[in-house]
Image 1 (cartoon, rainbow, N blue to C red):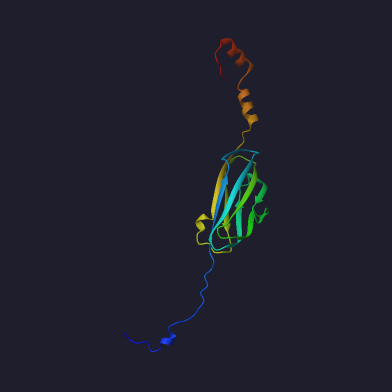
Image 2: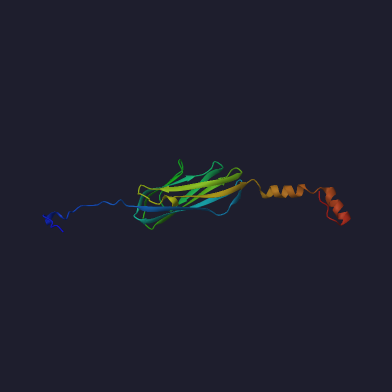
Amino acid sequence: NEKDPNPNNNEDNGTIYVKPAADLSITKTVSKYTYNVGEIVAYSIKVNNNGPADAVNVRVSEKFPKSLTLKSVEQSTGEFDTSNNVWSIEKLAAGGEEKLLVKFEATSEGIFENVASVVSDTPDDNLENNNDSATVEIINNTSNDIVSNITGNFSENNVAHAENSKQPVYG
């Protein structure tokens, strides 16, 4: 137990700067899984800032397959750049949420994943919730094709033979 020879130097003042942090998250949904070629596919995207700080220069990237042709975009705030498919939000307050509705025309068949991601200039320590995707199946099956396929399977002979025999005839 030694005595401090200079007790006047045991304290100091200083400033500690803590960078702001925001936990951005993104959710992407689509109303149904299967669409026909030519139908409009609508994706809904929600971006949340779980805080604790405001997020600045928020950017949502929309990556979609070539089988979808962009038709329209509606955003709750900010600007959507159709040349690079990026939605820019100047500031998203802590606890805030913004929405984007993107509509595409389905142009070819297949199963396609549409991916969206969010970043900002404000540090985000939880990147696991910064990406989301929705998958759709595009088929080339219109109601005219269905009717044509059904009626094409019945010939006049089949119908007449069925009427005479009172039994269904297939083929």
